[in-house]
Image (tube, rainbow, N blue to C red; front, side, top):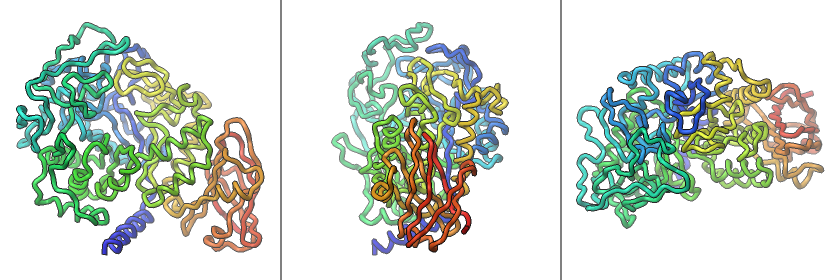
Length: 612
């Protein structure tokens, strides 16, 4: 019975995939996007270094993002998090620099779950209305909206002043005399006082600026456990000391204090999961985060990116995600999970749509780009993820990862081109790019708390290459170099092809190993595979070598020729990226071959066109 249900679920997923196209998520760090200032002073204030606003996402800006081949935009850092900026005139308390990372603050230290970052508003008193208008503008352009939810932890100075009627604040009803209670929202060290960490190296809050309170005297009694799980009342410098851990009904010894899903529920849909939890008595934090999610769905948000989802019990995700899908069935649910052994649990039991494919595909591509990995590993990765490939979101950059063009990575955005082709075309999974990636942003600035190679998420800073594309908010690329224009054109061609291609939502087959064994001059710098649907047949070839070109007669094995119902004839192949390269596929005795001459860092997406 269970296997039959599993088969039905898988069949439903396959039918759904046939109807939908590729998704492309554009992650944008909201406060940096529209900033035109180029001062870039380390630890600079908002006045010195500038900040972008919701209004900077004009219709023109959004249209240009969509024209890149984007379907969803992830507005990162929207929720009201701790910041070092005086908004007391608007009823917002000041945040203590001792428990804020950077001057602009971490977007993952949420201070008020029912409001947005006042930095992003032209008029902070109307900040929520300005975000609603951004949602409306985004939808009017034809893009979907994703925002973060950070369920594992909140800002140490959490203070929900915007709670809807009837919703109590996180921690407001906790029994702080207990280290743990099932319905406490936080964990405590009773009778102990929180102490800030010992600062290491040359670090000082605000870079040593003494104009704001940074006296190591933040008041918290009793001390709460820290977001990364540290139970110390005085956490270490490398702990997530600016945050506190949320309690989901896991006892200090790690045992569950909630109902668990019966065997077989991994094969059932979200409706069955919703019915399972509907009348269950669940920990209070579960209810509070469901209220948070429903609040933003009602505002028009189309999905969520869940931070550090693997640190929260999978049963909670079954409860929350089934409630989200019941309210909004088309919501996109994307999660940060880095442990491959947990992937299937969080997808099938936790009802996540997509997980980061970092540890498998991204890390493998990074090694190849840096010159010490072989393409031979990529088919192994795809084979190991075959049953969940649709659920593994692909990326080469995000706010946590080094920019491709940074010297600490490879120092050249062009090196990412073959990896980007592979990342976008090797599976049915969505693609994500990070704003500025498409113009080769190197993140070279020393921003303060953030360090070069990653665009800072903690500081007020400008993003120079992106600013050249923005061109004083004309959003026309008017200041880009010729090389940057060419790179953005590459991304635009590639992404737009992927969202329209039926083959990329169809079948995949590796031909790399067949050619490694049977084709002269084919080597570990090159990767090849085929993708197909009933309407479209593709051959993808990428050369990761930055210095050498290769020539060979690529072979397509008989089993694929037979699958494609091709005869012993000659067919034309046309590259779909630039439409300049063509090839002739000669089929003899059931095996296909065509000549490929591929330059350094070049890629082809050949489409089977016509019978010659």
